Structures are given as C-alpha cells and as structure tokens.
Image (cartoon, rainbow, N blue to C red; front, side):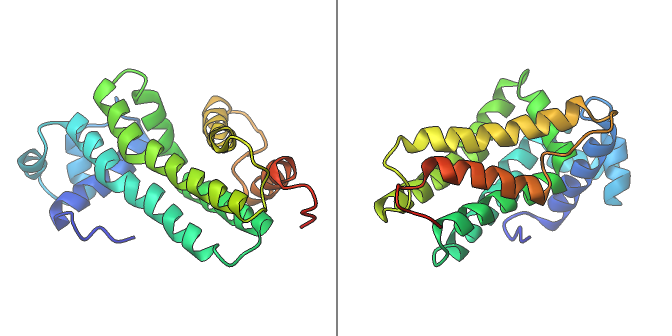
Length: 206
C-alpha cells in the first residue's frame, strides 16, 4: 500500500499507532508505547501530533481511506469484465479480506465513533460515504446492463454494509468465545450468493 503524500516519519507513527491501538485498545495505549513501536522518541510524536487522539484522527483521515476506499476502487476496475455474480463475489471477498486484516483496529474505530463526534464525521466523510458511493455506482451500472433488477440501489448497499458492520461487532462480542467467523472467504461466497439471488434480473441464470 502506497502513502506517497504522508511524511515518512509521520507515516511510521501512524502505522505504529495502528499496531499499538490494536494491542492495547485506544484508551489503554500511550504515546510512549507508540513512539517505542515506531522506533522514535516521544518528543518526535509531539512534533507531529498534539496527543494520541490526533493520531487516531489522522489514521482515519489518511490511512483508512487508502486501505478501505482505494482498494475497493481498484477491485471495481478489475471486475469490469466479470459477470455480475463473480464481480459481486470479488467485491465481497475484497471487503472481507480488508476487514479481516484490520478487524481489531476497526473495532476500536467503531467503538470510538460512538463518543467522538469529530472522529465520526471523519469516518463518515473519508471512509463510509465514499465506499457507499462506489458500491452504489457499481450496482447502478449492473442494473443498466440488465444484470440486476431495477430496485433502490441504496437498499442493496445498506444490506452489504450492514453485514460488514454486523460481522465486525459479532467478532468483538464473541472474541473470548469459540465461534464461527462471519468474515472468512466461505462466508463471503455464501453472502454473495444470497444477495445476488435476491437482486439478479429475472432470466439471469448465472
């Protein structure tokens, strides 16, 4: 993943913070621990950020969109020549893979946005709304090709996103209990088939 627009030192702080937040939780993490993980002094962190909250803001502003939005755009582009079912499956697998690789940190974000209005606005503007817009365009394009039924595309996007949020929250709720993961590739395929069979145009027997 490329982050050309972020200063190298700043990027190392952000990457270290993701690791430390994932291990300690946001409230349990300290700038001293982030500095140690980044291999820099704590003073260096404060030359870039006022506190750890500002670090979290910048992660959601810069790092998460690169991982969450840009990878989705790339996948959409790669799916242009695929049939509707396979394209939808590829999108779901991309989302599951992305979330699975950072699910601990994503749980932290989902927890903190309940209490931090600025963080919530950042997440909505930089991550959630762009992802929804990309998915909506994908659905509309496939509708225009006659592959999906003419239904409200926002309902389809909401089903897609709701499953992602449910899966992350379930992983958090059952983290200390043996359970089936809803974020594995088999689940991605099962959910894709259920969703596709509900929205495919009649006569589309892919």
